[in-house]
Image (cartoon, rainbow, N blue to C red; front, side, top):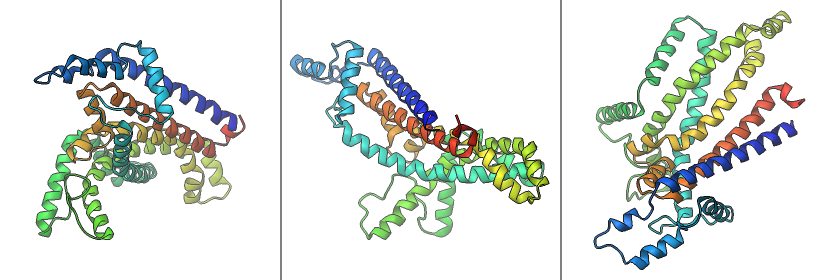
Length: 325
């Protein structure tokens, strides 16, 4: 098992390096980081532009620039943006925002998605199965920006019915909020509900469909019939042997889904005013800032690496065949 996990880790590290180099090269070939300097009125002195060009190493070959950038990152120096902002401080701030937004939504999406999928498989072709199937397809076919607007409308109706503001639509906390720690926590939760639902609902729909299919495959398997023949009740056979087997293919999906969501939730972040990693990536592209795009991509690649490796650990824990390789 240890050899299997080490081989997988080595593969992920290699893929992470390739992803970072490909993104850095593509951004370097297409971006002009000094474009904003030429658009200023009056334009800055030529010496200023030349100094910035030297600072960004724009005259060096791309592989040399990438190795220099990667070496600085590995030493903890994330560099600066084109405008001189410290990337390290901005990175950790943005990561915190994204994790606060996405972590809860992902946990809720996985937990409810698994429960709905398992229930749909056990009660196949029952009314509850048809209802969950219809809701899943409706949610999967609804664009995120439409779902977010519907949630905002629902929040407005709830606030109007309650006669006070229960749910907020913008930002992570009320600007200039003052109060106790408990009051601040409540304020943050009021801001968190709607964007969390926007994140979780799509994942519930997606994971429930995969989990239902995986569980249906298990329900007709020989080992489950053998477990029943040995005297286990249907409930115990399903949840002791069936669910464990059905979760094996889902582990990889859960892990990579969260890694991809970190930079893929840009619409949710922008609609609800949460300025996380996805929003920063779009900002970097708009400003043609190679350092921002490269560090966001590298961070996402590392997160996917960690998620993938953890999924392998979970896979090995659930499937005994992995442990003896």
